[in-house]
Every structure is written in C-alpha cells, then in structure tokens.
View 1 (tube, one colour):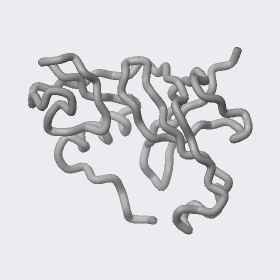
View 2: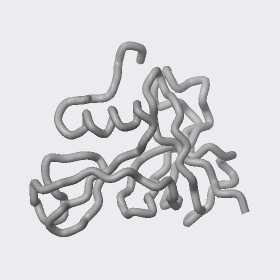
View 3: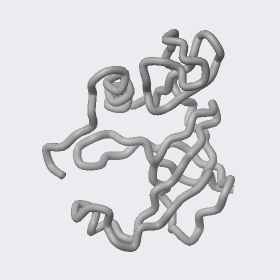
Length: 132
C-alpha cells in the first residue's frame, strides 16, 4: 500500500489537511445544523451547500466494531487481530476508525478520546477508551 494515499480532491482535502496539522475536523450545515463526516459538497440531511468546518473536541463513544482475524489486505497482516470501529463524536458525526485497546475490552457506548496516529505515512484519527 505504499504510495497510496487518501483522495484529497474536493472537500476531502480539507479533512486530510486538518489531520496533517493535528486536528480532526468535520462539516456542519449552516442551514440545518447537522454535523457530518465524511466531507461532502452538500449536507446529507437537507442538501444545502452551505457547510462550514468545526474542530472536534476529542470526546466520542463506541457505536459498533468488528475484529479482523484475517487481514483485509496483506499490508495489514502484521496487525491481526485488529478492530475496525464506528465511533460517534460528541458533536454528532460518525466515522470509521480503530480503538487502541484490547479487542476483548471493547463495549458498546464505551467513552473514547481522540488520539491522532499514523498509518502508512498518513495522519489518522484513532481512539482510546477513557480511563475510569
């Protein structure tokens, strides 16, 4: 997977650039207030093109996950078993990520905290359970 990076065309470019600068950003519709990820040209709720960017504060919760015991791609072979999770930011939008914790410790509604990491040379949003 070397040499392959995320698509930085259109609104996705602002998302990846923000991660490179150390921030997880998402779009919020100025017309209806809905928050969304991934970045798009229009609001997925009301179809308005009036979208602004906000920086996530870092809090989230675990919605769902799967654990891969066989790598989806050979580039991930050294990571098995690994989780792929749906995380909901405290601001509302959901994204696909990984949880930095033993797979057997994951629980629905588990509070999480954003932790930026790196995968194949790209800054990515990762999450760690909140202690307590």
